[in-house]
Image 1 (cartoon, rainbow, N blue to C red):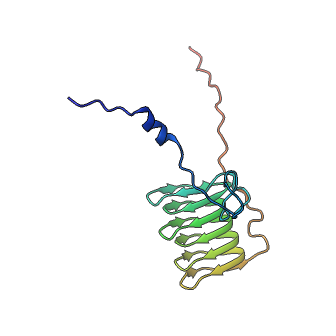
Image 2 (image 1 turned 60 degrees about the vertical axis):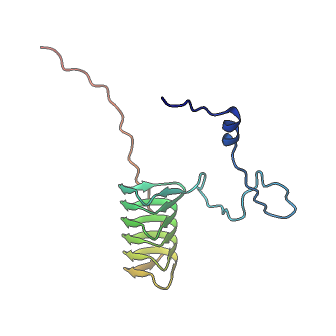
Image 3 (image 1 turned 30 degrees about the horizontal axis):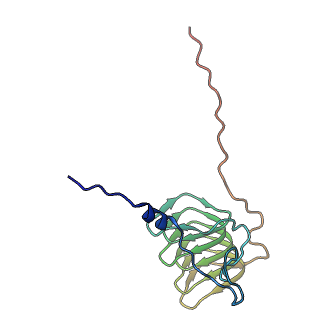
Amino acid sequence: MLPQFRKSENDSVVRSQPQMQNISTSPSTPSSLGVRPVAAQFRPGNGSGTSVIGVDLVIQGNLTSKGEVQIEGEVQGDIYATHVVIGERARVTGGVIAEECVIRGHLLGTVRGRRVLLQGSAHVEGDVYHQTMAIEQGAFFEGKSRRTDDPLAGLTRTTPEPVEATPSTPPPLS
């Protein structure tokens, strides 16, 4: 027979209270309640946090976000977002369209972004259309680099339109 396991009331109260960290932005500020950390940067369209595609996740299809997307797994399809970060172990097969693109992993496809950064561990095979671009030492890039004033002009995000259900009438009885 198993003993009865019960939580005491004090135990459940202590564990349900969130852990508070004191992040002070200046010595004169006694509390950080309601103050954004200094490291947080504002990006347009970033209403929530960063959407992360984990290492163990494989996505087959297009990915659309109004904010920031960080890819650590595998995506087989196009990515549309405001800010895209492709991690070192990530593999993307498809196009990337974003205001800002930081690429550290494998990308096979076209990149369209106002600001594009290929970091040292990047492996990019495809054309890059950009306003500004930086390539760190050690990055692999095979394709064309095309500077344009607005690499995102004329591009629309392809989102599937909802299908309306139409009432069907049964066939007449004969």
